[in-house]
Length: 416
Figure 1 (spheres, helix red, strand yellow):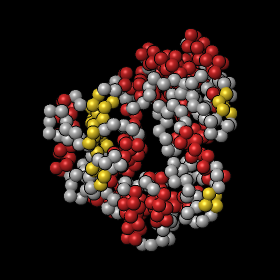
Figure 2: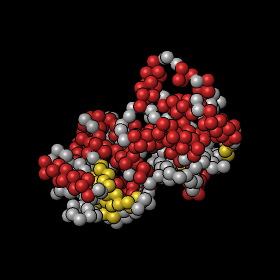
Figure 3: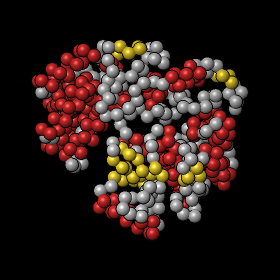
Figure 4: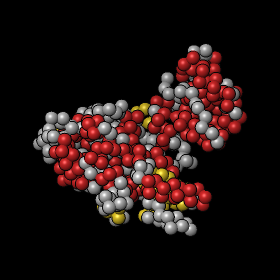
């Protein structure tokens, strides 16, 4: 039995709606108090589109229910149990679910990367929910891709990625330590639940990568460490990735080698952030984000990869992410009918979306200007996506959650 069987957790026996176990019953009953026919209609729509994979879309269903109801309702922790049980207690929907499961659950995928086979029933829900289609990949390889490729709307595995995997299986000599190695002969694990594979610069061995990410707490004093951290940011031309996988951000192998060597000489990024109170405070203390600011005399003027002029490394990071994800964008556009300027303008489904990178809420003049801009945008009916000061600690994550989600392939379904 895999993830999607009607009999999973005895859901087909009505267990979830019958149980009095407070771990499930209390939140379930609170959900039933506000659940409506409108919610059931939305659930049926997802079932008709995605069949046996219904539970993989738990997150999307929550979002759509809140949007449709116009309020921030609270869902049970085991909401996947709730939605499947709700379907199974409705005869015509239960028949549709069971028929689709019988029809597709034992279909086999042959992974295009490792040639292992896997059934539809074993596709991990977190992957299916993001791609909205079945890819010719086993869970393991699917997770590898997810480490550095946005899965939303992904249609197929590119030939470039297949070539990268081929190289990862070949013997190489590390330019840093001189050891011979094969990347795929070792699963390197840090705090992730899945094996790590590099997105770029696979010439550097996993041992040197691991050493860089774990850091060396015994090297140098605080000032020396901050200088090296700032040097890493300067080499990358961007705010370093909080997780420590920064050598993948390097434009060239030569820069990646220098960055990795510098990381061998300082504590891990997590430890540096702990020593300085937070990741944001580390960025300020090292002058990577001078005073945490942008658009002031403290700003660091730098060119993004597409040639746009940016006034801070944080701004460059977002511009580069737009460029890397092939999202057309206009820099420093005016708000329609006003002198205010946003940081970027995107076109999403025919609608203008203005992106603002805010970061100085504690500065009175800046905070006042921010309030004025947001008030005007609301009055004019403009669509604004605001990246706040708290988002600076992990810009990549904020980009995925606030910007990349605006470009999903919502109509995509699973393959045959």
